[in-house]
Length: 436
Image 1 (tube, rainbow, N blue to C red):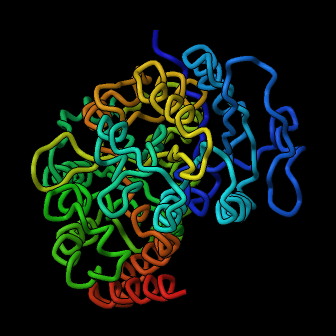
Image 2 (cartoon, rainbow, N blue to C red; image 1 turned 180 degrees about the horizontal axis):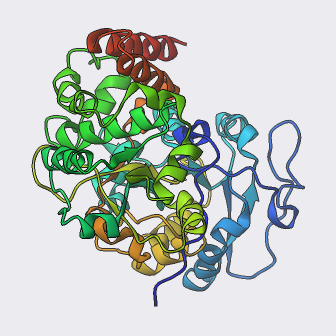
């Protein structure tokens, strides 16, 4: 039986997403953080009395209820390990964990954002997890890799694709695309019918960011040639300007063909969602967090999701990334027990338990698929292939410049600057962040 999709997961703003894929500022369950000291965040705890059990401490910026099914599963699957969960609010998470790790202390198992994992790996704070990481798709492990090693296992993903009005497609005999050019042709068919092909709230910088980067992912970043771009970019060895131009020039047909228009910069996300839900547009880019709202506005709407495509036929790509990375403290005295926990998570049963409280994402573990609602049928091949990727997660300390990219692309849409200047402006913002 297909499960009812829960409202997600992905936080109110991409500010949290760029660090973690998903953050949660909810209060800690069962006062989980009451024993955290004010100075370092270390818990004043004593060893468990349970004979034969090794206690490992696990920290996360999400409250305990968001992974309760996983904790229950681990309690049964790894009976000789007792996991002590510690919630630390997202606003203080990095500061507290950094302080602990720099003192040679801290949790045994750490939930890491891609940026913090890279920082901690460089400083030698994390144990490599190459053997377990080999079980996951590179789309998930790339953002947790440094100098040829994997330092965290990718958690359940968040993702975004293109919702479409299935009835509208069928009634007008319009076939689903399998390439970017076919997608543009579909948009042209709707335009000729007097139907707005894509509802987009370009008042926000996010749609231009995600849509264009999804194309670059499908066309370049997912290839052997482009797979190292993220690492090279954060190391200052390459630039967007001079590398992404060709791909974004092709993607710019979204603008020249009238799918994206300048008047959309006056429309916000909620207005665009309303257009799609009420049948005024055939498509709308978003993720599982909006599905309940769409269906509540129009219960009769038959909705599905397609992925983003490049110029060559493929399973397609969804923009997104791991909700968190699971890492092991290299200074932990309980490293063997911590690795047992990671090994249990790296099974189909472990992934399903991880997913249980966060339905709406996908697993990066090879061969693991979740039974999602029919609203994601046409994205199933991309999800099954692990084709869920968030390019700016690989920008390290400059990950925050993804917003700059989005706002600069807005200026490009409005004709205020050419593509070369747009990319140069982003490169400059990234360089400033990397030099701090």
